[in-house]
Length: 187
Image (cartoon, rainbow, N blue to C red; front, top):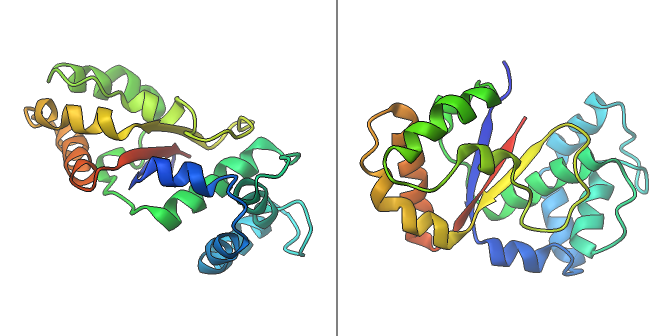
């Protein structure tokens, strides 16, 4: 394995309403859908799975309920990823997993720019979440492309000839067709 990009087309405005919206039913639905994965994450990071403990379940609750966020930043980054996954759909990332982040900045971004597109893969993994979160201490990297930017770049990306740019073009077409932006993670 290694590090790579995970990207999701999602209604970013709807995410902003969910994060801090105080909908406990939504929080329970997210935590319920991903219960096994979240519990495994907690186990892997030697965190308790007990209710009320400082763990990934609590981080998701803090984000959705609009509460203070006193836990380490990485928990909120991974918690936000589950919120995005709940509302979005995973995109094919085969050219980007595994993939060193330096490759995105040094190789992929210049080939995207060569098409006339203005999107940046580096921005997608490090530009910041579209909602207020404490910065992760290390991983995951988080970024996003707003819906308007995605839609404006569909045509230029269509001129891409590399596997990486063709993949990004497919992401943009799928997201733009739904009027969505794209949220990306790197870990």
